[in-house]
Image: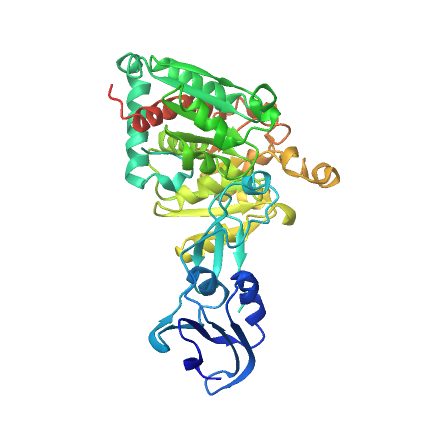
Amino acid sequence: MNIDSIQNGFVLDHIKAGACMDIYKYLKLDQLDCSVAIIKNAKSSKMGKKDIIKIDSPIDLDLDVLGYIDPNITVDIIKDGKLVEKKHLALPKKLVNIIHCKNPRCITTAEPQLDAIFLLSDPEKRTYRCAYCEAERRRHR
Amino acid sequence: MRHLIDITDLSVEEIDQLIATAEDILANPAKYQDAAAHKQLATLFFEPSTRTRLSFESAMLSLGGSVLGFSSAASSSTAKGETVTDTIRTVGNYVDIIAMRHPKEGAPFAASLRSPVPIINAGDGGHNHPTQTLTDLLTIHRERGSLKDFTIGFCGDLKFGRTVHSLVNALSRYTGIRFLFISPEELKMPAYINESLQRKGLCYEETESLEEAMPQLDVLYMTRVQKERFFNEADYIRLKDIYVLDPAKLQNAKKDMCILHPLPRVNEIAVSVDDDPRARYFEQVRNGKFIRMALIMKLLDLKA
Protein backbone atom coordinates (compact mmCIF):
# COMPACT_ATOMS: atom_id res chain seq x y z
CA MET A 1 0.00 0.00 0.00
CA ASN A 2 1.48 3.37 -0.95
CA ILE A 3 0.72 6.83 0.38
CA ASP A 4 -0.20 7.99 -3.09
CA SER A 5 -3.34 5.95 -2.73
CA ILE A 6 -4.62 8.84 -0.55
CA GLN A 7 -5.73 12.10 -2.18
CA ASN A 8 -6.25 14.42 0.81
CA GLY A 9 -5.62 13.21 4.32
CA PHE A 10 -3.01 11.76 6.65
CA VAL A 11 -0.70 8.84 7.08
CA LEU A 12 0.16 8.09 10.69
CA ASP A 13 3.45 6.26 10.42
CA HIS A 14 5.86 4.62 12.87
CA ILE A 15 3.11 3.60 15.26
CA LYS A 16 4.40 1.07 17.75
CA ALA A 17 3.31 -2.39 16.54
CA GLY A 18 0.02 -3.32 18.18
CA ALA A 19 -0.94 0.26 19.18
CA CYS A 20 -2.97 1.23 16.12
CA MET A 21 -6.32 0.27 17.62
CA ASP A 22 -5.69 2.52 20.66
CA ILE A 23 -5.15 5.40 18.29
CA TYR A 24 -8.20 4.41 16.25
CA LYS A 25 -10.26 4.68 19.43
CA TYR A 26 -8.66 7.86 20.87
CA LEU A 27 -9.09 9.71 17.56
CA LYS A 28 -12.64 8.34 17.20
CA LEU A 29 -11.87 7.17 13.66
CA ASP A 30 -14.84 4.82 13.83
CA GLN A 31 -17.05 7.92 13.47
CA LEU A 32 -15.54 8.92 10.10
CA ASP A 33 -17.30 8.29 6.83
CA CYS A 34 -14.13 8.25 4.69
CA SER A 35 -11.71 5.41 3.92
CA VAL A 36 -9.47 4.49 6.84
CA ALA A 37 -6.78 1.85 6.33
CA ILE A 38 -5.19 0.09 9.27
CA ILE A 39 -1.96 -1.73 8.57
CA LYS A 40 -0.65 -3.90 11.36
CA ASN A 41 2.84 -5.30 11.74
CA ALA A 42 4.27 -3.68 8.61
CA LYS A 43 8.00 -4.22 8.11
CA SER A 44 10.15 -1.33 9.32
CA SER A 45 13.90 -0.93 9.01
CA LYS A 46 13.92 1.33 12.10
CA MET A 47 11.44 -0.48 14.33
CA GLY A 48 11.36 -4.05 13.04
CA LYS A 49 7.56 -3.97 13.01
CA LYS A 50 5.21 -1.01 13.01
CA ASP A 51 1.57 -0.11 12.52
CA ILE A 52 0.31 2.48 10.03
CA ILE A 53 -3.04 4.24 9.76
CA LYS A 54 -4.15 6.02 6.58
CA ILE A 55 -7.06 8.45 6.67
CA ASP A 56 -8.42 9.62 3.33
CA SER A 57 -9.95 12.87 4.54
CA PRO A 58 -8.49 16.22 5.72
CA ILE A 59 -10.01 15.86 9.21
CA ASP A 60 -9.10 18.08 12.15
CA LEU A 61 -6.45 15.79 13.61
CA ASP A 62 -5.71 16.14 17.33
CA LEU A 63 -1.91 16.03 17.36
CA ASP A 64 -1.85 16.38 21.18
CA VAL A 65 -3.66 13.07 21.52
CA LEU A 66 -1.21 11.44 19.15
CA GLY A 67 1.80 12.97 20.86
CA TYR A 68 0.53 11.74 24.22
CA ILE A 69 -0.10 8.20 22.98
CA ASP A 70 3.24 7.94 21.22
CA PRO A 71 5.53 10.92 20.50
CA ASN A 72 7.50 8.76 18.02
CA ILE A 73 4.63 8.68 15.53
CA THR A 74 5.17 10.71 12.35
CA VAL A 75 2.27 12.35 10.60
CA ASP A 76 2.42 12.66 6.80
CA ILE A 77 0.06 15.28 5.45
CA ILE A 78 -1.18 14.46 1.95
CA LYS A 79 -2.70 17.03 -0.40
CA ASP A 80 -3.77 16.26 -3.96
CA GLY A 81 -2.09 12.88 -3.70
CA LYS A 82 1.28 14.37 -2.67
CA LEU A 83 3.22 14.39 0.59
CA VAL A 84 3.30 18.11 1.55
CA GLU A 85 4.49 17.92 5.16
CA LYS A 86 5.95 15.41 7.58
CA LYS A 87 5.29 16.28 11.22
CA HIS A 88 7.30 14.86 14.09
CA LEU A 89 5.40 14.80 17.34
CA ALA A 90 6.46 15.61 20.87
CA LEU A 91 4.86 15.01 24.25
CA PRO A 92 2.35 17.85 24.58
CA LYS A 93 2.90 20.21 27.51
CA LYS A 94 -0.81 20.32 28.27
CA LEU A 95 -3.59 17.79 27.75
CA VAL A 96 -7.20 18.91 27.83
CA ASN A 97 -9.95 16.29 28.06
CA ILE A 98 -7.70 13.49 26.81
CA ILE A 99 -7.09 11.68 30.07
CA HIS A 100 -9.05 11.97 33.29
CA CYS A 101 -7.99 12.13 36.92
CA LYS A 102 -8.42 8.94 38.91
CA ASN A 103 -7.89 10.56 42.32
CA PRO A 104 -11.23 10.10 44.14
CA ARG A 105 -10.45 13.24 46.17
CA CYS A 106 -10.04 15.43 43.05
CA ILE A 107 -12.72 18.02 42.27
CA THR A 108 -12.87 16.75 38.65
CA THR A 109 -14.17 13.38 39.83
CA ALA A 110 -16.98 15.11 41.75
CA GLU A 111 -17.72 17.67 39.02
CA PRO A 112 -17.01 15.93 35.71
CA GLN A 113 -18.18 18.91 33.63
CA LEU A 114 -14.84 20.60 34.45
CA ASP A 115 -12.19 20.33 31.74
CA ALA A 116 -9.75 17.54 32.62
CA ILE A 117 -6.42 19.38 32.42
CA PHE A 118 -3.05 17.63 32.78
CA LEU A 119 0.36 19.29 32.63
CA LEU A 120 3.60 17.57 31.62
CA SER A 121 5.70 17.44 34.80
CA ASP A 122 8.58 15.15 33.83
CA PRO A 123 9.26 14.58 30.12
CA GLU A 124 11.93 11.98 30.93
CA LYS A 125 9.48 9.77 32.83
CA ARG A 126 6.57 10.84 30.60
CA THR A 127 4.69 11.97 33.69
CA TYR A 128 1.67 14.23 33.72
CA ARG A 129 0.00 15.77 36.74
CA CYS A 130 -3.61 16.83 37.12
CA ALA A 131 -3.72 20.64 37.08
CA TYR A 132 -6.30 20.55 39.89
CA CYS A 133 -4.99 18.02 42.43
CA GLU A 134 -1.48 17.22 41.05
CA ALA A 135 -2.19 13.47 41.01
CA GLU A 136 0.25 11.74 38.70
CA ARG A 137 -0.47 9.89 35.46
CA ARG A 138 2.48 8.13 33.90
CA ARG A 139 2.40 7.09 30.27
CA HIS A 140 4.05 3.72 29.71
CA ARG A 141 6.47 3.39 26.83
CA MET B 1 -5.88 39.64 38.61
CA ARG B 2 -3.90 37.39 40.96
CA HIS B 3 -5.09 34.32 42.85
CA LEU B 4 -3.30 32.32 45.55
CA ILE B 5 -3.94 28.65 44.88
CA ASP B 6 -0.52 27.16 45.53
CA ILE B 7 2.31 28.70 47.54
CA THR B 8 4.47 28.68 44.39
CA ASP B 9 2.06 31.19 42.84
CA LEU B 10 4.12 33.66 44.88
CA SER B 11 7.79 34.27 44.15
CA VAL B 12 10.31 34.21 47.01
CA GLU B 13 10.57 38.01 46.69
CA GLU B 14 6.79 38.36 47.00
CA ILE B 15 6.75 36.12 50.09
CA ASP B 16 9.55 38.18 51.63
CA GLN B 17 7.54 41.32 50.89
CA LEU B 18 4.42 39.83 52.51
CA ILE B 19 6.45 38.95 55.60
CA ALA B 20 7.81 42.50 55.73
CA THR B 21 4.29 43.94 55.42
CA ALA B 22 2.99 41.59 58.14
CA GLU B 23 5.83 42.66 60.44
CA ASP B 24 4.93 46.29 59.81
CA ILE B 25 1.25 45.62 60.53
CA LEU B 26 2.25 43.91 63.81
CA ALA B 27 4.30 46.96 64.74
CA ASN B 28 1.80 49.60 63.54
CA PRO B 29 -1.73 48.13 63.34
CA ALA B 30 -3.43 51.55 63.38
CA LYS B 31 -1.70 52.49 60.11
CA TYR B 32 -3.64 49.74 58.32
CA GLN B 33 -7.06 50.05 59.95
CA ASP B 34 -8.73 51.58 56.89
CA ALA B 35 -6.64 49.99 54.16
CA ALA B 36 -9.57 47.84 52.91
CA ALA B 37 -12.39 50.28 53.66
CA HIS B 38 -15.47 49.58 51.48
CA LYS B 39 -14.02 46.25 50.31
CA GLN B 40 -15.75 42.93 50.97
CA LEU B 41 -14.32 39.48 51.56
CA ALA B 42 -16.36 36.29 51.16
CA THR B 43 -15.27 33.32 53.25
CA LEU B 44 -16.72 30.26 51.52
CA PHE B 45 -16.02 27.29 53.77
CA PHE B 46 -17.41 24.06 52.38
CA GLU B 47 -15.61 22.25 55.21
CA PRO B 48 -15.39 23.15 58.92
CA SER B 49 -12.64 25.42 60.24
CA THR B 50 -12.01 27.57 63.28
CA ARG B 51 -8.70 29.33 62.83
CA THR B 52 -8.52 29.81 59.08
CA ARG B 53 -12.00 31.24 58.62
CA LEU B 54 -11.91 33.44 61.71
CA SER B 55 -8.40 34.67 60.95
CA PHE B 56 -9.47 35.69 57.44
CA GLU B 57 -12.51 37.45 58.87
CA SER B 58 -10.49 39.10 61.62
CA ALA B 59 -7.86 40.14 59.05
CA MET B 60 -10.43 41.78 56.76
CA LEU B 61 -12.21 43.52 59.65
CA SER B 62 -8.87 44.82 60.98
CA LEU B 63 -8.22 46.33 57.55
CA GLY B 64 -11.54 48.21 57.75
CA GLY B 65 -13.29 45.91 55.25
CA SER B 66 -16.35 43.74 55.72
CA VAL B 67 -17.05 40.03 55.51
CA LEU B 68 -19.80 37.65 54.40
CA GLY B 69 -19.93 33.95 53.68
CA PHE B 70 -20.89 30.51 54.92
CA SER B 71 -19.17 28.01 57.15
CA SER B 72 -20.46 24.68 55.86
CA ALA B 73 -21.54 23.22 52.53
CA ALA B 74 -24.89 22.33 54.13
CA SER B 75 -25.76 26.02 54.47
CA SER B 76 -25.03 26.85 50.81
CA SER B 77 -26.56 25.82 47.48
CA THR B 78 -23.92 23.08 47.29
CA ALA B 79 -26.46 21.07 49.29
CA LYS B 80 -28.78 21.43 46.26
CA GLY B 81 -26.09 20.21 43.89
CA GLU B 82 -24.62 23.55 42.74
CA THR B 83 -21.10 23.27 41.29
CA VAL B 84 -18.10 25.12 42.67
CA THR B 85 -17.87 27.14 39.47
CA ASP B 86 -21.48 28.32 39.70
CA THR B 87 -21.13 29.22 43.38
CA ILE B 88 -18.01 31.26 42.67
CA ARG B 89 -19.49 33.03 39.65
CA THR B 90 -22.44 33.97 41.85
CA VAL B 91 -20.51 35.14 44.92
CA GLY B 92 -18.01 36.94 42.69
CA ASN B 93 -20.80 39.40 41.89
CA TYR B 94 -21.12 40.44 45.52
CA VAL B 95 -17.56 40.75 46.83
CA ASP B 96 -14.04 41.93 45.98
CA ILE B 97 -12.13 38.82 47.05
CA ILE B 98 -12.94 35.22 48.06
CA ALA B 99 -11.22 32.89 50.53
CA MET B 100 -12.47 29.34 50.05
CA ARG B 101 -11.95 25.98 51.72
CA HIS B 102 -13.24 22.84 50.06
CA PRO B 103 -12.84 19.12 50.83
CA LYS B 104 -12.05 18.28 47.19
CA GLU B 105 -8.49 18.75 45.96
CA GLY B 106 -8.20 21.35 43.23
CA ALA B 107 -11.55 23.01 43.94
CA PRO B 108 -9.95 26.47 44.41
CA PHE B 109 -8.08 26.04 41.12
CA ALA B 110 -11.38 25.17 39.42
CA ALA B 111 -12.87 28.29 41.03
CA SER B 112 -10.00 30.49 39.84
CA LEU B 113 -10.61 29.50 36.20
CA ARG B 114 -13.97 31.31 36.19
CA SER B 115 -13.84 33.74 39.10
CA PRO B 116 -14.29 37.46 38.43
CA VAL B 117 -12.39 38.27 41.68
CA PRO B 118 -9.18 36.97 43.34
CA ILE B 119 -9.46 33.51 44.93
CA ILE B 120 -7.45 32.53 48.00
CA ASN B 121 -7.13 28.81 48.64
CA ALA B 122 -7.92 28.37 52.33
CA GLY B 123 -7.32 24.61 52.12
CA ASP B 124 -8.38 22.00 49.54
CA GLY B 125 -8.65 18.54 51.04
CA GLY B 126 -5.26 17.00 51.69
CA HIS B 127 -3.67 19.01 48.91
CA ASN B 128 -2.61 22.60 49.64
CA HIS B 129 -3.05 25.26 52.29
CA PRO B 130 -0.90 28.20 51.16
CA THR B 131 -2.03 30.74 53.76
CA GLN B 132 -1.06 28.31 56.53
CA THR B 133 2.31 28.12 54.80
CA LEU B 134 2.60 31.91 54.80
CA THR B 135 1.71 31.82 58.51
CA ASP B 136 4.40 29.19 59.13
CA LEU B 137 7.00 31.17 57.17
CA LEU B 138 6.21 34.37 59.07
CA THR B 139 6.46 32.48 62.37
CA ILE B 140 9.80 30.86 61.52
CA HIS B 141 11.08 34.21 60.28
CA ARG B 142 10.00 35.95 63.50
CA GLU B 143 11.44 33.19 65.70
CA ARG B 144 14.74 32.76 63.88
CA GLY B 145 15.25 36.12 62.21
CA SER B 146 15.55 34.60 58.72
CA LEU B 147 14.40 31.72 56.54
CA LYS B 148 17.88 30.32 55.89
CA ASP B 149 20.24 27.75 57.36
CA PHE B 150 18.29 25.58 59.80
CA THR B 151 17.08 22.00 60.29
CA ILE B 152 13.35 21.43 60.35
CA GLY B 153 11.63 18.20 61.38
CA PHE B 154 8.13 17.38 60.17
CA CYS B 155 6.42 14.83 62.39
CA GLY B 156 3.20 12.83 62.07
CA ASP B 157 0.98 12.57 59.02
CA LEU B 158 3.23 13.55 56.17
CA LYS B 159 1.17 11.72 53.56
CA PHE B 160 -2.10 13.64 53.82
CA GLY B 161 -0.76 16.71 55.63
CA ARG B 162 -1.42 19.57 53.22
CA THR B 163 0.30 22.09 55.49
CA VAL B 164 3.44 19.97 55.41
CA HIS B 165 3.46 19.66 51.61
CA SER B 166 3.04 23.38 51.10
CA LEU B 167 5.65 24.33 53.69
CA VAL B 168 8.26 21.91 52.32
CA ASN B 169 7.59 23.28 48.86
CA ALA B 170 8.00 26.86 50.06
CA LEU B 171 11.14 26.21 52.14
CA SER B 172 12.76 24.32 49.26
CA ARG B 173 13.24 27.70 47.58
CA TYR B 174 15.39 29.03 50.42
CA THR B 175 19.01 28.05 51.06
CA GLY B 176 20.70 25.95 53.71
CA ILE B 177 17.59 24.13 54.95
CA ARG B 178 17.81 20.48 55.99
CA PHE B 179 14.59 18.46 56.17
CA LEU B 180 13.89 15.54 58.52
CA PHE B 181 10.68 13.63 57.81
CA ILE B 182 9.45 11.73 60.88
CA SER B 183 6.50 9.42 60.21
CA PRO B 184 5.35 5.81 60.23
CA GLU B 185 5.71 3.93 56.95
CA GLU B 186 2.00 4.34 56.12
CA LEU B 187 2.10 8.13 56.45
CA LYS B 188 5.38 8.88 54.69
CA MET B 189 5.94 11.95 52.56
CA PRO B 190 4.60 11.38 49.01
CA ALA B 191 7.28 10.34 46.53
CA TYR B 192 6.72 13.37 44.31
CA ILE B 193 7.75 15.74 47.12
CA ASN B 194 10.91 13.77 47.83
CA GLU B 195 11.67 13.65 44.10
CA SER B 196 11.22 17.39 43.85
CA LEU B 197 13.72 17.91 46.70
CA GLN B 198 16.16 15.54 44.98
CA ARG B 199 15.83 17.44 41.71
CA LYS B 200 16.71 20.66 43.55
CA GLY B 201 19.71 18.95 45.18
CA LEU B 202 18.29 19.47 48.69
CA CYS B 203 19.07 17.42 51.74
CA TYR B 204 16.36 15.34 53.43
CA GLU B 205 16.21 12.26 55.64
CA GLU B 206 13.35 9.99 56.63
CA THR B 207 13.01 8.33 60.04
CA GLU B 208 10.32 6.77 62.22
CA SER B 209 11.93 7.93 65.47
CA LEU B 210 11.07 11.35 66.88
CA GLU B 211 13.51 10.76 69.76
CA GLU B 212 16.46 10.23 67.41
CA ALA B 213 15.61 13.26 65.32
CA MET B 214 14.94 15.62 68.24
CA PRO B 215 18.50 16.81 69.12
CA GLN B 216 19.14 17.87 65.51
CA LEU B 217 16.12 20.12 65.15
CA ASP B 218 15.90 23.91 65.10
CA VAL B 219 12.21 23.76 64.22
CA LEU B 220 9.81 20.90 64.99
CA TYR B 221 6.61 20.96 62.95
CA MET B 222 4.05 18.62 64.53
CA THR B 223 0.92 17.52 62.68
CA ARG B 224 -2.33 15.83 63.55
CA VAL B 225 -3.26 12.48 62.04
CA GLN B 226 -6.47 13.59 60.36
CA LYS B 227 -9.45 11.29 60.70
CA GLU B 228 -11.21 12.88 57.72
CA ARG B 229 -8.42 11.81 55.32
CA PHE B 230 -8.83 8.08 56.01
CA PHE B 231 -11.19 5.82 54.10
CA ASN B 232 -10.59 3.06 56.66
CA GLU B 233 -11.29 3.86 60.33
CA ALA B 234 -9.15 0.94 61.58
CA ASP B 235 -6.07 2.53 59.96
CA TYR B 236 -6.86 5.83 61.64
CA ILE B 237 -7.23 4.27 65.09
CA ARG B 238 -3.95 2.36 64.69
CA LEU B 239 -1.97 5.47 63.67
CA LYS B 240 -3.60 8.39 65.47
CA ASP B 241 -1.47 8.36 68.65
CA ILE B 242 1.78 7.21 67.13
CA TYR B 243 3.64 10.41 68.09
CA VAL B 244 2.86 12.33 71.26
CA LEU B 245 5.17 15.20 72.11
CA ASP B 246 5.55 15.54 75.88
CA PRO B 247 8.09 17.20 78.23
CA ALA B 248 10.13 13.97 78.46
CA LYS B 249 10.71 13.88 74.70
CA LEU B 250 11.80 17.52 74.79
CA GLN B 251 14.67 16.72 77.17
CA ASN B 252 17.01 16.17 74.24
CA ALA B 253 15.82 19.14 72.20
CA LYS B 254 17.83 22.30 71.63
CA LYS B 255 17.06 25.11 74.06
CA ASP B 256 16.11 27.47 71.25
CA MET B 257 14.15 25.00 69.13
CA CYS B 258 10.66 26.17 68.25
CA ILE B 259 7.65 23.88 68.15
CA LEU B 260 5.02 24.67 65.55
CA HIS B 261 1.68 23.01 64.81
CA PRO B 262 -0.96 24.17 62.33
CA LEU B 263 -3.67 23.22 64.90
CA PRO B 264 -6.13 21.87 65.79
CA ARG B 265 -4.24 19.34 67.87
CA VAL B 266 -5.79 16.26 69.36
CA ASN B 267 -3.27 14.22 71.35
CA GLU B 268 -0.03 14.80 69.49
CA ILE B 269 1.20 17.59 71.78
CA ALA B 270 0.58 17.12 75.50
CA VAL B 271 -1.03 20.17 77.12
CA SER B 272 1.90 20.17 79.56
CA VAL B 273 4.15 21.31 76.68
CA ASP B 274 2.12 24.51 76.18
CA ASP B 275 3.99 26.43 78.87
CA ASP B 276 7.41 25.49 77.51
CA PRO B 277 8.92 28.62 75.93
CA ARG B 278 9.70 26.56 72.83
CA ALA B 279 5.99 25.99 72.20
CA ARG B 280 5.16 28.66 69.62
CA TYR B 281 1.92 27.32 68.11
CA PHE B 282 -0.39 29.89 69.64
CA GLU B 283 2.01 32.62 68.52
CA GLN B 284 1.75 30.99 65.09
CA VAL B 285 -2.05 31.38 65.22
CA ARG B 286 -1.63 35.08 66.00
CA ASN B 287 0.77 35.53 63.10
CA GLY B 288 -1.81 33.95 60.75
CA LYS B 289 -4.07 36.96 61.01
CA PHE B 290 -1.32 39.44 60.14
CA ILE B 291 0.04 37.57 57.14
CA ARG B 292 -3.52 37.25 55.82
CA MET B 293 -3.95 41.01 56.19
CA ALA B 294 -0.78 41.45 54.13
CA LEU B 295 -2.06 38.96 51.53
CA ILE B 296 -5.49 40.58 51.16
CA MET B 297 -3.75 43.94 50.65
CA LYS B 298 -1.48 42.46 48.00
CA LEU B 299 -4.22 40.71 46.02
CA LEU B 300 -6.47 43.79 46.14
CA ASP B 301 -3.52 46.10 45.46
CA LEU B 302 -4.24 48.18 48.57
CA LYS B 303 -1.94 50.62 50.31
CA ALA B 304 -1.79 51.53 54.00
